[in-house]
Amino acid sequence: MMTELDVLKALSNVQEPDLGKDLVTLNMIKDIVIKNNEVSFTVVLTTPACPLKDMIGNACINAIKLLVNKEAIVHVNFSANTSSNRKDAQQILSGVKNIIAVVSGKGGVGKSTVSANLALALSEGGAKVGLMDADIYGPSVPIMFGVRSERPMMREIDGKAFIIPLEKFNIKLLSIGLLVDEKSAVVWRGPMASSAIRQFITEVDWGELDYLVIDMPPGTGDIHLTLMQTVAVTGAIIVTTPQNVALADAKKAIAMFGQAQVNVPIVGLVENMAYFTPEELPNNKYYLFGKEGGKKLAEEYDLPFLGQIPLVQSIREGGDNGIPAMVSENEITKHSFRTFASMAVRNIAVRNANLPKTTVIEVVD
Image 1 (cartoon, rainbow, N blue to C red):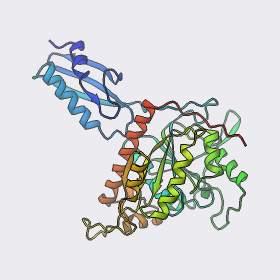
Image 2 (image 1 turned 90 degrees about the vertical axis):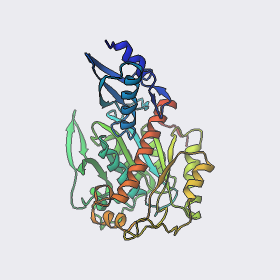
Image 3 (image 1 turned 60 degrees about the horizontal axis):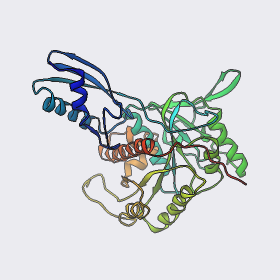
Image 4 (image 1 turned 45 degrees about the horizontal axis):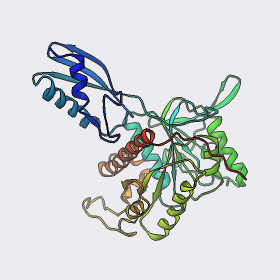
């Protein structure tokens, strides 16, 4: 007769691959039910978008059959309690577990494409996701999601007015492009742009989210500092392309997060437009901008490398037509974004388990 102790002892041999400890030590096993030869239990994952779910499930089944009862019928259920490591004094965005800033040293590297498809890939995995377009001067989200003509509504909470993000493809969206006429240039000095970002954080009803992905403006400036001074950012993802001019600017973004007063770890680096693949020749790779520059940069700075996104015509067309790659029918491009998102989400979980809590930064003028 199997006992709960037998089951826990067996499962203490199953490691969580990223966190490097066993499931029992990590308190990930819940609701064990045993009836004759049948046993069921729930594994509580660190994110609903966990790419290792099947591997962990199979390891659990094998452990019980090998160490407890080879005839056992094992039912492994999954739930998720998304890990978080924020420490905010004012509890701004209290319902948001992880805030991910997607940054680049220069414009034109596809940061908005990466942000949009990261958000969609996380949502596809079952996470609750929001996408904030913080690129005040060049907002892309309204075009990429086909919502240029839509306007967000307002809601009053405890006597204070809040903006309600739009919802499209099962994620929450907000962009300055939804609030101003796109034919009008946003001619703002730094303090006005910073004020808008602060408003997007403190006066928007984002609700409960596992991940809020923030598409940052290129470079390193006021808006980046304002974000990090206003709310505790879980981590940053650096986007670059392989050519030297982009890599040189990516180093500046890496350097910004490496400063002692900036308490935001880098989740990893992703190389966009890594190679060109014609859709009629999906196995061919043409390295138009150089080969593996982003990968080598990640190695140079000892950063996690989150993957390569190819330069494919359908990615550009989807962004222009309001149908991002992750909701298109092109499985090749979807695979590259899923691979990138799975690496990102694993590194976020590792960051939350092993690094100190993120706090807002204090910058002395």
